[in-house]
Amino acid sequence: MTLRAALLAGLLALSCCACSDRAASAAAGTGSRPLVVAAAASLAELAADLAEGWEARTGRPVRVRLGASSTLARQLASGARADLFLSADPAWVEGLPARARRPWLGNRLVLVAPVDGVPATGRSDASAA
Image 1 (cartoon, rainbow, N blue to C red):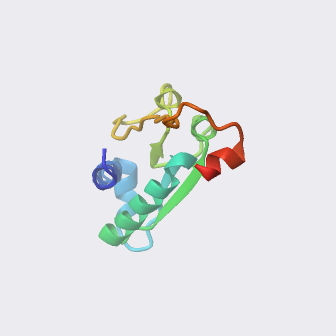
Image 2: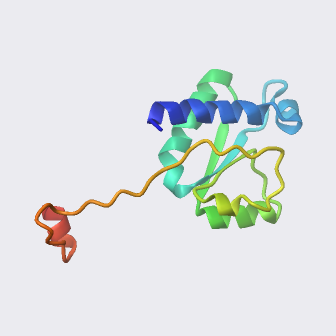
């Protein structure tokens, strides 16, 4: 998925979130509370882009909380408030109360090895490549 597609999917997810009863009532009127997004630290750049786009589109502020998916999931299970949870691991979403779960972003692990087959043995070898 390209970054552009991911951003569009994220804005769609935020739009769905804003349609929930709690978020919609909070958005009514000026001075509404911020939309709270709990996001995995590995999604920090994406979350910031989504927040910027959402704020520009709606005028509603967004507060992004970053952390490990496991930590954020435990906080949410203990009662922390978030309007949207962007987890890097779908397993941490299971068991959390939610109106809807929509997987919309994924990633892949890519391994890169030298052509000559000689692996890097230390940090200096990797940075010299």
